[in-house]
Image 1 (cartoon, helix red, strand yellow):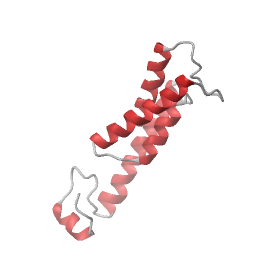
Image 2 (cartoon, rainbow, N blue to C red):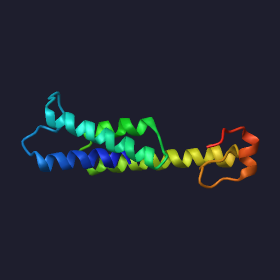
Image 3 (cartoon, helix red, strand yellow):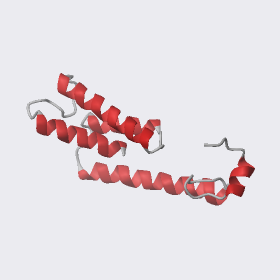
Length: 119
């Protein structure tokens, strides 16, 4: 979500303000500040609404909103990395440890045995 929000904000502000320098670099102008602020706000709001708070997603949003992701290959690389992390989390938490991961599909017996605080 963070990646797509950051890319969407760069695209939106590039369309609204074509003269603003939103490509990577050391320029700091009002359009770049507005892009970063809105991207962080929308990403944070989305994480709160969907109950998936994850601080590294905010960093990914900033990286994308700063314009450092500029090719389809880089977007594909991020998506592959996220999928690999999810597979790793399922493997280590669910299959090897019996922990209730992911939260939307767990057994109550596993939760009772792991001393996890109630949500």
